[in-house]
Length: 71
Image (cartoon, rainbow, N blue to C red; front, side):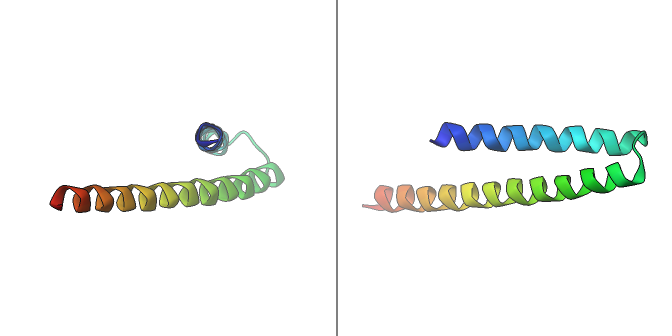
């Protein structure tokens, strides 16, 4: 299951890079640019949430390790 989340994060990040390149190229119309921007914002929020969750997990694991070393 962790593999699926990782792939989802990686594919979201890849798609976000594609969107960024499309928007930076200036070769899309206003309506398409707005659609891409909205998609990009949703992907960025999803990636941020995934990263915050991973950060929290690492913090908890680090604390557990430090506590086990003290004993």
